[in-house]
Amino acid sequence: MSAVPQRREVLRVPPTRKAEIVADLYRAIREEGRTLVELEWEQQRLHESRRWSAVERVDAVELEGVSASDRLVVWNAGRAELTTKPGADRLARLADQECRRWQGRNDAVASIIQACGTWSRYWNEEEAHHETSFNRLALLLGLERISDETFIEFRKIFPDDDMLRTLTLLSISEIVAAVNYAHCARITQEPGLKALFKQVGADEIQHMNYFIAFAKGLVDSGEYRAKEAFAVAHLFLREGGEVQGSRREHVEQRETHVNWWDQLEYREGMNAPDAAEKKETLIFHALKRITGITVSSAEELEDTWMELVG
Image (cartoon, rainbow, N blue to C red; front, side, top):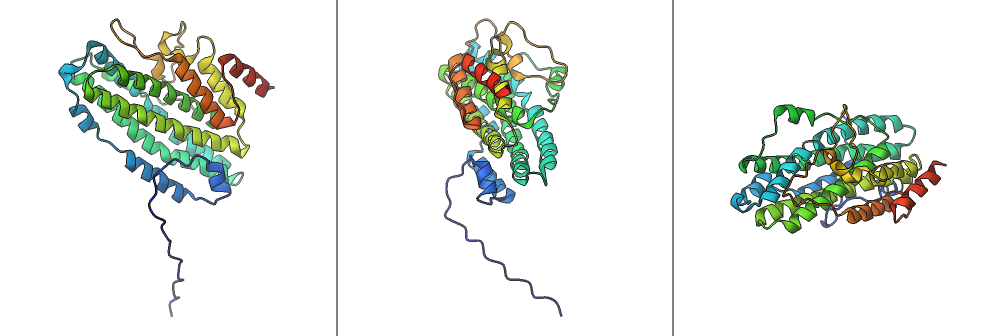
């Protein structure tokens, strides 16, 4: 006689609420018992609520109305966005390695990192919208073509690093990109291109918030040290730091990977974004959200980093 299947409790689904990022991951997993399946569903809901069509956005741009300066911005953006897929690929690989390293040692940390790796597929897809939109527009506008050699070069997958350092770097990279796109959206006069810049900028802010949430979860766990987040922020905001991108006096020549901010070409007639103070302020705010530590200047950031290093 076959066993009677056990009756399972019916899941009572609450009224639909607005999809959002789970900002306090360590508590959600450790104290509330949130599972990876539940977190995955939240990621899916938010992704679906924000999904847009690259084809429709490109079709909405009146090519004749795109200024010479905006054409250079579009060309730059398309090249730069080629480097985001390798970043997402690296994140998925690193998350898998780190998740398994923490299994059995700190399962909440393993779950946070696995949630990050799971979300990386949405990041990858959304960045593909950015890359293809700008590169298609550049082609339609008759701009300098990206060679296959450049395409392949920009696809080099980033080398692995400490997980917290990686997430902090990605948070800051998204901040710089978001501020740049916001600037572009303000100055362009072509409505379709303005809408595209706004959409891409909104995506970058959402990505930043995800990276901050994952990084905060690692710091909250006590397994990762705030000093690593500050080390990366100092790399960007020190004198001649990465936040200045290709404008800084010395740009490192790397054989391992390509950083998008090093590849921007500021050509004559191009209305190029800067907004250094805005970027600094947002980086300080990100550090506060990740570590709970407040700084308000590059000098204070360096001092705090040195104190944390001990």
